[in-house]
Length: 317
Ligand code: UDP
Image 1 (spheres, helix red, strand yellow):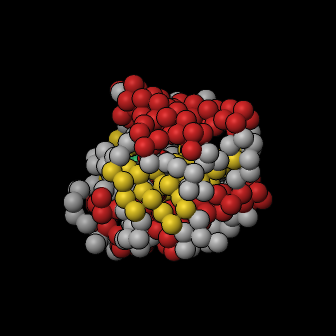
Image 2: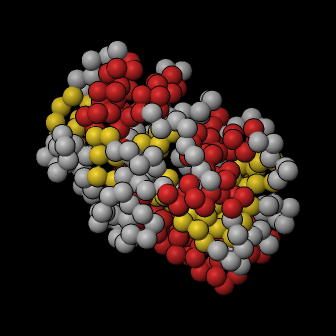
């Protein structure tokens, strides 16, 4: 059955891929994005576009919408450390306004783009949703605050909500891929080296307690991530706030990622060892058992070489 969805942040990387999947599934999609970090051309063909701020969501939200998928947020860990107020204002203040608009318009389903950064330094691996949350950055803290807000909204006002805690999203889908300005993520940066746009990739620390000394992350294909959102919107149950990790449960080290890029691109990729980056846990790997059980999620693109190949095709456009 075709439904009508508001996608906030639908001009950004993950939001645009999810909006594209919703359209392909036959739904009506409105993208709300202030283009502060998104790109107008990221809005998929077939979506209605509103250039506006989530703080003003009440202007556009009405009871004709079946659900909101909420991606609009600032997402740079390092920036959040130096400008925490920017993160509280947009991520927390913006979401408060959005929740109020949803209450007012009686839109009672929400899928929220949360993050592994809500956990901070893991106490065990893989990370489950019942593990302690102790974020190590204002970014993670702002996303955790929103998760708490949503829990209260579900309990007090009957919202049906699912928070999806992403691990390391990568790859591309259709016309949409990862691009940030400035770029800080490992895979797009290594691909810039392959393209000759950078001389070498810096490895941030090679003395971590991991098999090769470099940090281990759980990379998930953006299309698998998008599928989880379609399942989540159907699973949202009035009065319940479900939290699900999204990852493949496989960890790859920074060195393994660089080696995979060498194999996929055929480029030698010079590397240099650099100091550790502040706030990086040694290992972040998800248990996605909850997403599998509760959403019926079954990722099909877990292969790192395939994820890198899709990102490489996008980088070469
Ligand atoms: N990393 C690196 N060099 C870079 C960028 C990232 O060694 O130029 C490392 C980073 O320290 C982390 C991993 O790659 O251990 C993944 O970082 P990314 O920023 O892609 O994602 P995060 O894990 O911070 O969400």
